[in-house]
Image 1 (cartoon, rainbow, N blue to C red):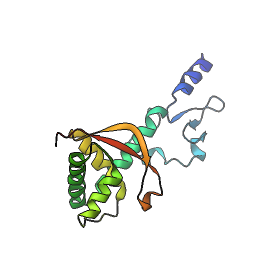
Image 2 (cartoon, rainbow, N blue to C red):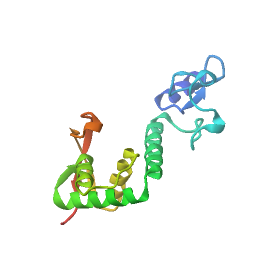
Image 3 (cartoon, rainbow, N blue to C red):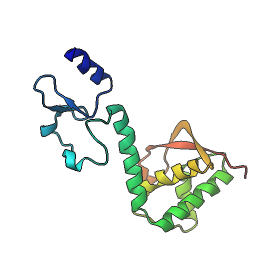
Image 4 (cartoon, one colour):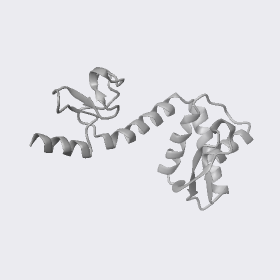
Length: 160
C-alpha cells in the first residue's frame, strides 16, 4: 500500500512530499530533501502551500506570479500606453506580436518602463477584454533586447 501511494504521487506529486526512505520531505521541483533544497522555508513559501500544490500546477502558478509581480512593478502610465498600443495593433493588423506593440510604443515617442516583462500582463489584459486571442504560432523577435527569442503571434478580434 505504501508503494502504491508513492507511485500515485509520482504521476503528479505535490511540490513537497514525504520521502519513502527516511520519512522526511522531498522536493519534487529540485529532486532533493527539503532541508537541503533551495526552496524557501514553509513560512516564506510564496503564496501557495508546497504540501498541497501539485507539480503540474507549479509552473502555471510560478508564471502567473511572475506576470502579476511584473504588472505591479510597471508604471500605470506605461500600462495604459501599452494597452492602447495593443488596441491600435489589433485594429491595424490581423495578426501581430508583442514586438509590434513595442514598435508602436516606440513610434509614438513612447513612455519608457524598466519592467518590460509587464508586456505579458498587458497582452493578457487585452485578451480578457476581447481585443486579441493567442495563436499556437511563434516567430523570432526582431527586437535586440529579446535576442531573437520566440514571441507568440496574437490574432486580432477587432472589427476595426
